[in-house]
Length: 84
Image 1 (cartoon, rainbow, N blue to C red):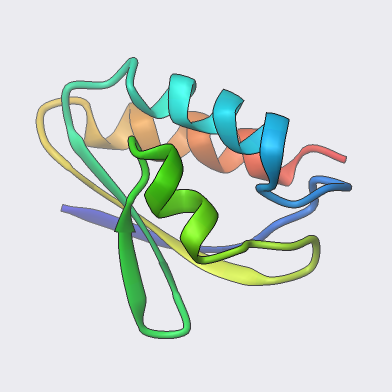
Image 2 (image 1 turned 120 degrees about the horizontal axis):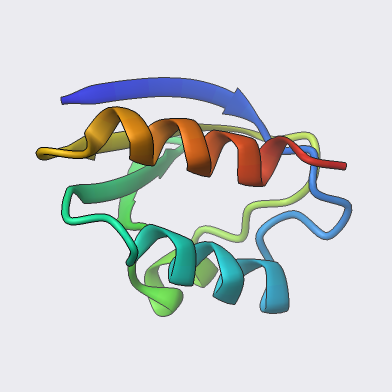
């Protein structure tokens, strides 16, 4: 299992379209992928889960991946939310 604390730099955070694109990217990996914010952990492959934690620009989240491609998943998803 790999965890990484990151700051969201996307202008719209993980709302609407960026959230849908993030979920699509997360679903490319076989690993289980989660996002944790303020003690609430959600499945990063679920648009409803992701929308329920309302991640906005500038917030810190923890990305968690567990599986055969966990390192690659964390790297790509970190890059996704760190782009401005």
